[in-house]
Amino acid sequence: MVGTPQTDRPDPATEAFLAHRNLLFTVAYEMLGSAADAEDALQETWLRWAGVDLDTVRDQRAYLVRITTRQALTRLRTLGRRKESYVGPWLPEPLLTTPDVAEDVALADSVSMAMLLVLETLAPTERAVFVLREVFDLGYDEIAEAVDKSPAAVRQIAHRARAHVAARRPRQVVSAAETRHALDAFQRALETGDLQSLLDILAPDVVLLGDGGGVKQAVPRPIVGADKVARLLAGGWGRVADTSSLRPAQVNGHPALVLRLDGELDSVLALRIDDGLITGLYAVRNPEKLSHMARETTLSR
Image (tube, rainbow, N blue to C red; front, side, top):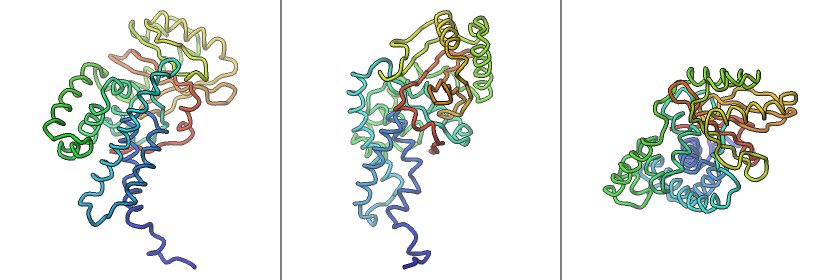
């Protein structure tokens, strides 16, 4: 039977879920730092949402955010236990993002690799409250329902989390143009093997983190200091230069570099920049974390 336009439309529950799906994914991803876990949280959200009597729901967006937050909190606690046995440094899962993410400066800042690593230092409930309040501008009453706390308690948690993040986040929001300039200089220095040019773009206290997940070779612990980082990068690039390529891409709302070896995706290299210099380098090599680099992901607030 050929359906009419009316019968071809999804049911109201599906329609509402699809309308808010990008927002829900963004909430879950910012809480978890893992696209795979965020997708799982959305699956659980859908299962619960499908059983809700929509006539009892006053605000569908808020209700869906509440379900997603609870699912993400459950996964966040499990993820914390998994990270304890993770081989080497753990880094967030990079996303190839759509151009509009970079245009929303606040959103791009909130999903940057640097900010996601700062959020990792928060307790699960603190992270949920911070994300919902500072990124998505939810009211304290809405957040209280999502995290099963009183509005007064949520206010205190938000204040504490805000202070914690402020002490650790990048010193200023860096424009896309500044990031691109630093990235271009870094790429040129790396490809030419110019050690001095590398030293010129790296901050004296730069930190390099590598995530191979025990599957691919990566630095087993943070490398600190411009000289150590520059020599490591120059030496590593020298060994693979003939069979590799570096290309810029929009990753988590910011310019980053994608390394391919023999045409195959090998690593994503994201940057943290402060005062025009690279203060953080985050190299993700774990193949399980690179699946979302095959297609653009749409994020929204």
